[in-house]
Structures are given as C-alpha cells and as structure tokens.
Image 1 (tube, rainbow, N blue to C red):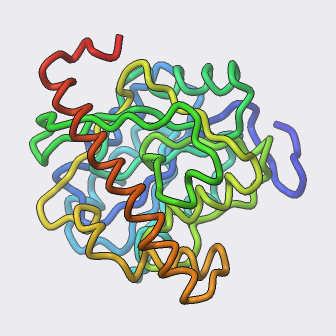
Image 2: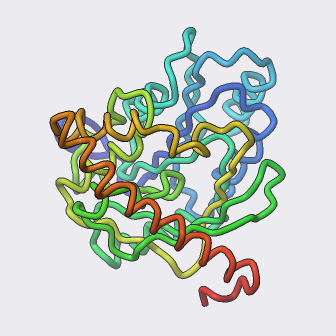
Length: 278
C-alpha cells in the first residue's frame, strides 16, 4: 500500500460505490454481480440510507460477513443518495472509483474491460454502453454514449451513465464527491471531473451493465426536473439565473432531445438484432 497525498490507496484496487435504501427485492443480485467480477481486486463500499425494511439490513449484514470485500455502514437518518455515495467515497481505499446502484447490474467482465480500456486510452474517466430494462430485468432498450465525451458536451446534457462510470483518483486526486444538490448529483460530478481531465472515453463495443427503470422512479421524470437541471448550472457552473435558464432551454433541451431520439433508434435496432454492435 502506498501513500498518495494525504490518503492511502491500494494499487489498482477498484472501490465500488453503492447507496442502499429499502432495496431488499433487488439488492442481493446487484451485490452478487459485483462480487462475481472477473476483476477481483475490488471492494464494495455500501452505505445504507436508514432503510426501514428488515430485508435490506439483513442482506447487507449477511454479505458483509460472507465476503470481506463488502464493507457496510448503516446511517441512522435518511439523507438521500448523494450523501450516501459521498459517505462511501470517503471510506474508499481504491485507485478507481466506480458506481453501481442497488437495483442495477453489471456483466461479469465489466470492470476488467473498462480498467483495460482506461489503460489503453490513458484516460482518467470512462463510461460504457448499457442496456435498459424493466423491474423484471427484461431488456427494453440500449444506451450507447458518444465514444468521446468532452467538457463542452457534458455541459449541455449528461451523456455518462453513472452505473458505468469509473474515474482514476491517481490521475485526478481524491477530491471529487457528489455535490450537495437534491437531484442530478451524478451529472454535476461529471461536469466537475471533465473540467480537469477534459475527455471521458466510452467503451461501446458491447453493453456492460443493466439499468433498471422502475415504475415511479424519479430518474424516469427528467423532463419534470427543470428546477434541478437549472440548479446544476447555477450551483456548479456559477451561472446567473437568467443564463442558467437560457442555457437550459437553448442548449440542454435540444441536446437531451437528440439523445432520447438516438436512444430510441439504437434501441429499435438492438432489439431487432443484438449483434448490431459487433
């Protein structure tokens, strides 16, 4: 183990960040998909955001006892997923920080592919293509990001799926946390990271993860979250209120619309022929 700045970092260890809240139905499979990674040099850092269901706590304790790579913290009060993710990041000891929510899943080779890809591209931030599925994990679509995502692009709209994002603290320093805004913390985080590293490379040869869209999920209602999108411009980029709203309506909405249209076209092609990416 060697010191990097003021913190210790295990060489090439991946710290997987997972916030949980009343996730009993989905949690076990999400944890297992991480522990079954072909890239075994990982730790799974879980912060439970004061779950009220007994199943979630029971599952967390069972996994922590069975595998020393699982490290849990149980909060006594609910603070939101951003706070829980930051609590995980603070405890992380790895060089790489990756994210997986408690209802999402990875393919077994996900980390191995991306860590090798980051080495090949010599990049500090990486994301990947992922499949979109319903609560029964039936595939309904696919999200294929641009192969190169720049700071200019990320300002217009978030093009990085958080469940596929990995960043390198050796290159960037361990200084990036989810901003303390109510929603869109992941987008805000990637804006800040790209201010430093300039380019995020996306692995697009095949899907590496499964993004679960549940009924009544807040993430399904992005167009109802105008306030939170504007807050990113005001809080993170320090835009005036007028500039933030102008940026939202003149740049964010067209960019977001194009992304959704492309996703629909890509999904239609993929559902017809899953080999279309090869």
